[in-house]
Image 1 (cartoon, rainbow, N blue to C red):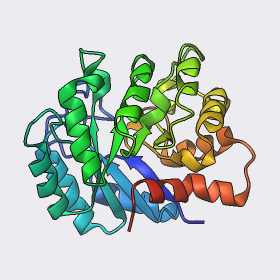
Image 2 (image 1 turned 120 degrees about the horizontal axis):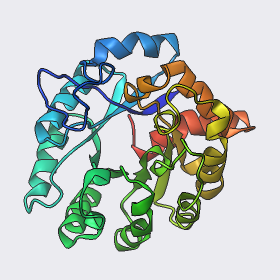
Image 3 (image 1 turned 90 degrees about the horizontal axis):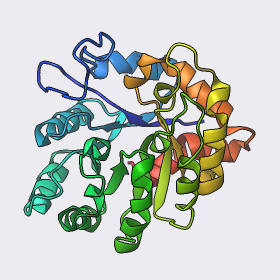
Length: 277
């Protein structure tokens, strides 16, 4: 079975700031470059991956595209651009020329304006993304989920994916209001979901695969296997678990599936969504 890790990061503290990282966090506050990830991929037979932005700069997008050009197992890059810039189309065109840009992401969860996604300028930028056959990663929390149907209706040709199942409160085993909100996303066929980033929403020191079960079963029901994909969220996941523990926990929480469904979850959905070579 081929495996694509649909969501990991790379960062270099000598090049970028990563303001979201706590200054005193010794796990996050170190550089993670392709040479650190390559042996992990070899150990677990990961055939390809998508690297996702961690710094909101175009310079970081260029850095990730260079990594992808240098390491063929990086099949695609989800970078950052300023969606509200009137010249965002030109920036996207420049990045497309540099390497395998497959999508764009903005750290919506950090925006003070909870309706940032619905701003006219944001939607215009997303239209430029859609026009170039790129996808959009939604880094959101439950509070933002109610906005997503409006974007799906406004831009039906834009493929979007909800990162980290929208970060429900796994620590306290709360399903609401996340569950009700995520169910409303079922009708939108241009919308996928990443089963990723869950262990860091649980108790970092005392989580169990069973803790993830009700959340993964919910998104499995909402999106179906055809619109679910697995991602490690490495190296952020190291706050709570190693690479294999993350992968094993996701497969456990997915429950009983056929070999074809497992292949779709671990490979096919990401390959289709990101149009990977």
